[in-house]
Image (cartoon, rainbow, N blue to C red; front, side, top):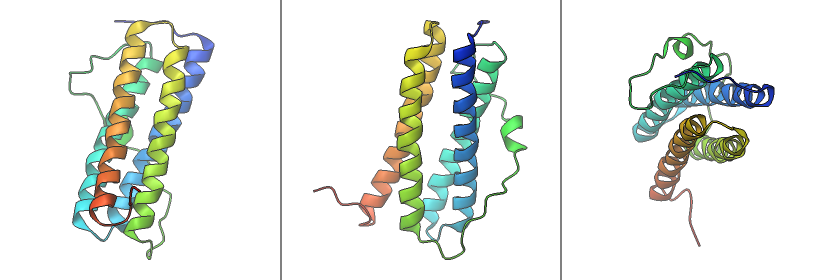
Length: 153
């Protein structure tokens, strides 16, 4: 199905696209820097889903509403350059704190974007992505809590 985007909707999607690209870089770089194998796996899993989000945003920008249940083409995201470097001595706790902060921010920007789109199907697609971003945050939170890195009072 096709959709015609307003200038504001296009601008919001471009913002989300840049957020997804940064998340992909963070997860890729942190997967390589993490000491704990469980954290590496979380980074790899979340990074794969971020690639799907980027593909979805690119589809929306091209005027197509993707089917959220289909396997999505990930070639554009896989060809991204990962130029950001991570200090070799970064702790797993610092990695988690940065990723959790990023997921909180990105989820919030999706929330704002959802209310700015006139097409219900596009809103549903963005809501689907937002829910997955929240799941990413939850996986990081649970990991941190299990390792004593995040204590809820």
